[in-house]
Structures are given as C-alpha cells and as structure tokens.
Image 1: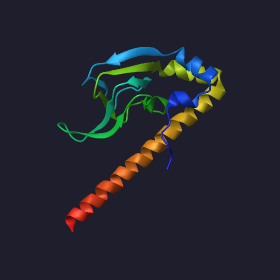
Image 2: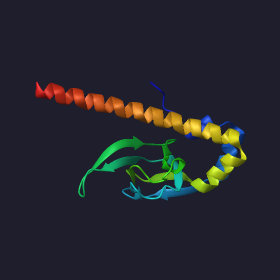
Image 3: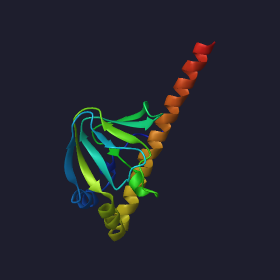
Length: 151
C-alpha cells in the first residue's frame, strides 16, 4: 500500500519556493461549497488547516461523502487532466485555510521548469494512487459488512 504524501513535501526547497510564489492564501467558512462536480477545474488548493469533504451527488437530494481531507492535503487534481472538470464536489467540513494555486500559472511554471513539472505530476500521481487504495479498502469493508449481515 502506498503511504499518504503531502504535495508540498515532495518538492525540493527551491522548487517548492517557486511554486509557493504562485500561492494565494484563502479561507472557506464551514459548510461552504468549494466546487461542484462538473464545474471548471482551473485551480487547486493545499489545505493549511481545517477539513474538507469530497462528495459525489447520488441524485437531486442526496450526496455521498467519498473522502475527507485535512492539513497538508491536496484538494483538486482535475486541473491536470482534460476536460478539466471536477470529478467530485468539495465542501468545507470545518473552517478551512488553504493555499490556492491558479492552474494555468502552475502549468506555465511546469513548462518553464520541466523538473518541477515532473516532480509535481509524480507527487499528484502518488496522492491519487494512495486515495484509490484507500477507497478500494473502504469498498472491501462495506462489501464484507453487507455480506456478513446477509448471512
């Protein structure tokens, strides 16, 4: 199983400084919808404090929480991949402070510094692999619980 990594820690200090030069500090009050599935993914965040729930709309009335994120976690990866639309929704579960990054500016920086770009993409890929493994584990647990209750 992959271990959880924090995006900013995978970058060597000089590259992290270049990326952080593009950061803007933002905050979201509790219960604020940060983005909705299907919306334009033109930015991403690194959470400084607080908690964010990723959710999936089940129907017009119901949403299911698919993951929880906290300090140091990457919020948003859809900016890297066409069609650049959010796959999930995100809501502040508590007051959140974060670094916000404009995707176009980060992609330009990655083109100017391919080493930073490769390190950044590898870091995002590791984060996605870890989240996929965690989701698989949750699905297996739910399957086992349902199977036991059916017996």
